[in-house]
Length: 573
Image 1 (spheres, one colour):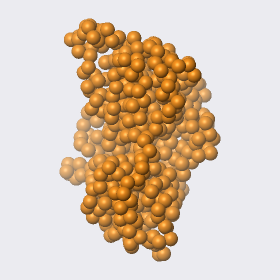
Image 2 (tube, rainbow, N blue to C red; image 1 turned 30 degrees about the vertical axis):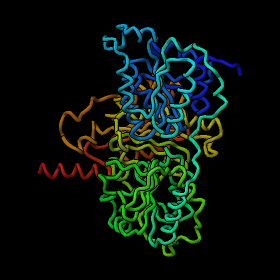
Image 3 (cartoon, one colour; image 1 turned 180 degrees about the vertical axis):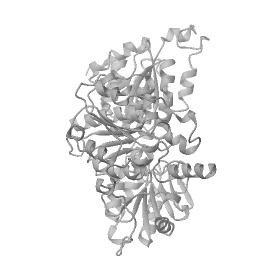
């Protein structure tokens, strides 16, 4: 390796070392010379329709691959992306946002440059991003740039949140030292402390003494990198286990002790009673947002809960700080003697997720939300990535019994409608790269399946073209329920502001450049849906496939949405 390389080469080598093989973004005048180095570095450039979609896609890529990246231009480009970056921060997706900025001389002289507020002030956009990223750096001195890059990338991995890197256009070709490239960027290795030893001993005592223990799994175990450890704990303990919506698919749902998502006040009375009667709850990676906890009703009793987070262990009523689940959970698993833990000899009779077949519905009847998701779960295969957009699809997909190694994206906290379509593009690309590298659970063929409503689709429809352009293996089920049904459930069920324009949705693949033989289908009845789902071109084809599924505008999955809708109807009467 030469002693020096150009700064852009250094940056892209570091991204490649993190497992990022593709860069999303949109070209702009202040990043064009930076983009010249993407493909020579062995990376794929994915040009998106706009910066917002690029950031959504980088987020979806990151949640599957471990990190993602996008490049935008100064001002107009980066602000277009900032909504998605905020969502990645809220839901812990490690995205590297690289911004091409004006030359240092322009900034120093306060030139009245385009893409600014025309007042000579160049720092406002970085200040905005400081609120939605965990670390930021402004490259300015070539000698210091490698260390700055490495530092923010480490913070990205450590916190599993977005970071922000400014690259002035006149610094792209500057020579920098290659010395640091031989040192891997990684999360710092943590050495156990006497305090941790004492806490671990207390946890073990509680685990061994428990008579009615249960497990809660939440989505931050992905960000913490402890999915395998938690999976092993669930399997070995055989304790009754539930997830949140964010945690769904991170545990093998075919295990006999897995009981799906706990829905709090919306769950069956016997489930609520059993959980409320637990004398120990081990909660892994909690993410206690209102949506993820069913309006806070599914949060377990803190007096009997030990929760493992990124910064602390909540030991029942005691908060022990500076203890990360990334180290504590593996230590617990290594120290625990499962022969000493409670065994449910008479395992409790508790509901589990289940499938519904077409024999359970009338063939000529309309497709309804109360059955469709459990029927469509039969379509899923091991290794599929399933994305349920904010709306009825996002709530409905929570009812699906998923096969092993399936990953589910569902609304959790940010709830920016339109996210899931570009995220599907990014996730499908990450999936393809992992399969090509033989790092996908031994699976050699898998699909990315998007479940999205008509209103959400209209937000980011252009990304179909990116899916088509990159020949990604994506199946889109478009739920046509004539507008924003999720908003109708909340308020204004019959108001015009919850309507959307009527599109010819199945013409979208052709318009966006799909091959003439790309599969499209539609269904209004159960019989039509059965026929479509049985078509080999849909199940075993490749590239983009799209199905339009019609449902009533005032029909919603059982749970919060259906109850909100029913309350409106009762109030009206």
